[in-house]
Image (cartoon, rainbow, N blue to C red; front, side, top):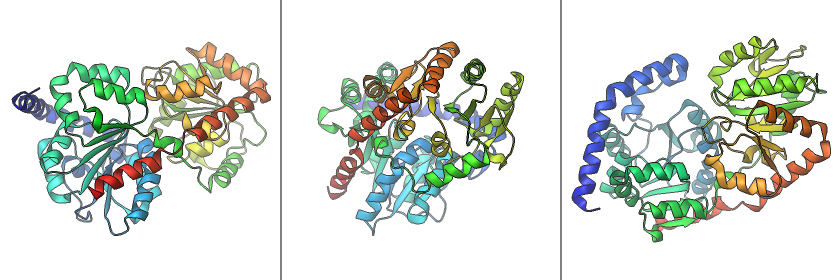
Length: 429
């Protein structure tokens, strides 16, 4: 693709984005109704930079909670190795913002990243003047990348992944994706499969590498055992069997509740910890539970002496502790076509892992866990109840699966250190 074609492609993208501006703004307003946290700092999303932000930083963009958690150890290591350097971490969601503040505190500057409008990105770059831009996983925004490139700001995509589905989508808009991907200085991929997809999309093979996934390097917080012990007492779960369905979405929660009804016929004391991906949905999920004549409460309600059929997790930063209370873990976003969420977290806690068939977001991780015998796939409520029931009834089997999951994770570590070396070399250049 020649320069003129690339220019016209980007120009067309910018026109389409400008036409979408009213829709984007209205959607943001509507989202603030469902999630009031989105009302705060709205100007940052359109390029307004807080006065507290220092220019000349190494800028990490981590999107949401999962990416912020995964990137935090890497950012901390970079801070230690470059104590005189400023760091800026941006997210797109309030949950991501909470994780940045919780895990990195005042060691970094933080604000929301701008939407990909030329005026917003331009003002953000002029004000912050970043030394380097580091994007996580799949954050490929044309204006952001091309405008950074135009200002000679190195752009790196780390912990990068490209599913088959996404690759097909990028291929359909190759008139835009090819020049944008070509403007990235280096792409550090999670696996060889992801790397090949980037190469097939036209990225120079010399600008792509395989460093693994930094998510394998997650360390359990020192306070986790204490937090889990307190939760077990507060939720009155000391003597009950427990299974967890984590990071769930609308459309699969109905199936999970149906499976729980089936399981309770065999395990009458069984408790389900149902943790939606978006905690603000707790009351809607509660209505579904109540509609099946099951009792429920939110995890935020404090100590209880009552016994509830279902506990809905509605507090950010609580997921690992809730996983710690469970005997079996179901990972959500997989019974619908969302692509599944991170199975590494329950594996790190030595839990047997169950999920639906839609796992394209973590296909390589799922393949490793499945090959090791640590991961079971189900397609509906009946299968979910059957697999979870078998594991609840067989302590030795679930301990064996959990041990295998933990072994896979431990054998896959090291991406954080390799990525740190890559970023350090780019800074040196």
